[in-house]
Length: 388
Image (cartoon, rainbow, N blue to C red; front, side, top):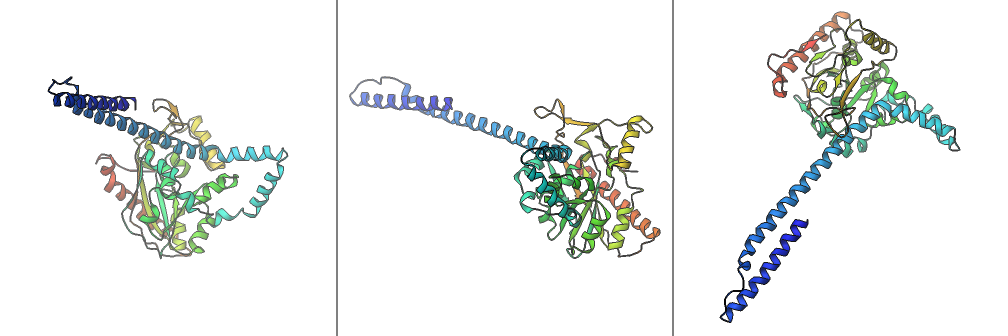
């Protein structure tokens, strides 16, 4: 700004000097100075100053946007990891103060509202359209690729692969409108299914339900596929906690070969299966991988068996620098490709042969989807999807 003011002052001085020169010539005298002739050069300095100013402004704005993107991602990571526990502790503290009635009222209401998550929750279009999710999307960036139309007269089970550490692509694409899922699949209501234990934690459950997230259990899926009309799409991260344990940059592997429960549910309700692959999901965090038989893997499997999730030792970048370690994921593109739906018949009592048949069809469709799109998103033609 100082540069701009100085340049403008130079123009004024040049114009005053030019006026003095014209007056002197009209009286037959020589020009007093040649500075007036430089006013156009000074005008160029204003243009240069403006360019510098706009350049600095753009750089500052770009830097601010990048920080907003980092903060938007970090708030979700911290919400996912500690919001439920933190709010539980806060409510217990409030209960021990003069404001104890707040805690009593919340938990009383919680008792009456306990089964709401099992019925699809309370999605909020206002929350799903928050600007923070657009910053979240642009940080990586994340995009959703549609390959086929979906009929609103059918229900669907989407299989999301791979899990990654936190399933960030699944959250952004299906629990927010940042990638315009409702416009790409009009008439389809997505429900991202996650651990039922998250819905036992105060406040966190409300946050999750507002985005259209529901528990991944049989009661919830049965309700959404049989008592909630048509046009429902339940997104299941099929590999679950077991798949997250093998998540690492450069690896494309899914845990699927013995995961057949989602196929059985699809057959019982006649819900079409839709395979998805999220390229880049494994790239955003680095993880310490414990070998089979090690004490670390033993602990992880025990947690997975009795609690439902497997604790991972992972890291991303720091809040202020990509050269330090922290909880912020690395800024790597995540592209979720939604494949062609597999038409599933309705069989109230599917046999194991029926389940195996459609499970095989699903695995083949997923591998085909991966092979068709892998080179578009940075993988070599020789890259093979590992199905475990």
